[in-house]
Length: 246
Image 1 (spheres, helix red, strand yellow):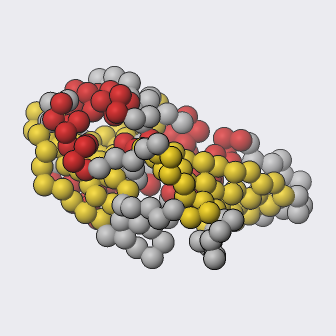
Image 2 (cartoon, rainbow, N blue to C red):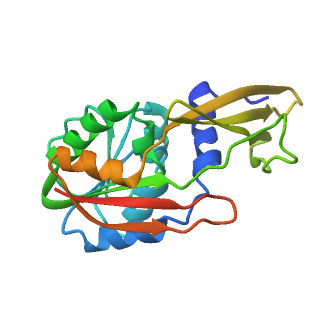
């Protein structure tokens, strides 16, 4: 019998399941990278949903994330692409070169612990951009609150199967409190021998308007550019992409 996956491999599979299938924003990142006269920094890259797409298009990409297991998976998947990885916190990174474009997809800027965390990230991003370079940061569209105890029906779970292991992740609540939106999921794992595990996972997004992020960008030395928009899909809310020029 095969040994069960390590906790790091479980982390990779959960990330792939809950983030990897999102495609609606990819055309925008490809467009911005094609127009950028230089390398791209992908902040909060995870297992490489965006970085791999841009690398396949021939762009030199540095993927930055604070999770070593996710970056390890990315390196394996992009071994023959022009990709580099950086293990660092988005609020405190120091790389040895600058970029023409920095992208922060999938609400990464709403995971930084409030205004102070975003200010630190914005200063880091500006320091790593060439003069005239662009920071593009996605903000989630409005999320409607619900709870499993009162909702008529819940969203269908995302499912993933690999080598007999089945992973299921189901949103069970969206709650708001004091400037934070909490997204609650129930994660279920079914092993090949039928053993199952269940755990609750909570993601906390800072509630943040585009105007507020643009003002914070101005304070960090950026100049706001016209916003871009990603339309909602059947399974995902839309996004507003705040564009800031260094």
